[in-house]
Length: 82
Ligand SMILES: [Zn+2]
Image (cartoon, rainbow, N blue to C red; front, top):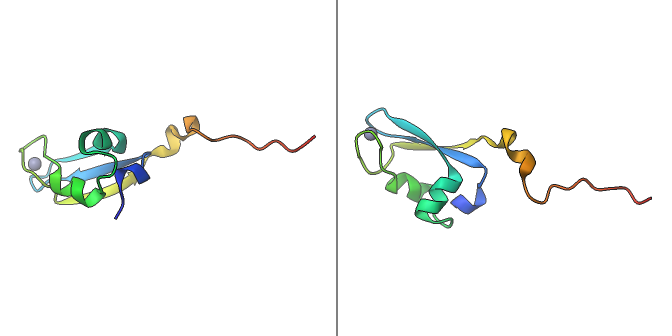
């Protein structure tokens, strides 16, 4: 089980049976469902913006962090002692 809190820099690709799919940033989902919600639960609870169906056919965790990873907290180059 993967909680949303564990993958803050990822997106979820949610596929609906109607063919509609959405790529949603995980922080937006954490805000809606709670950070301790796991990915399976998001899949069950997600609502299609196109047809209104509840529950996605498939969910995929997408890593999209490369472009905004640089402003991540705690990234600090280690300085050699002088
Ligand atoms: Zn749909």
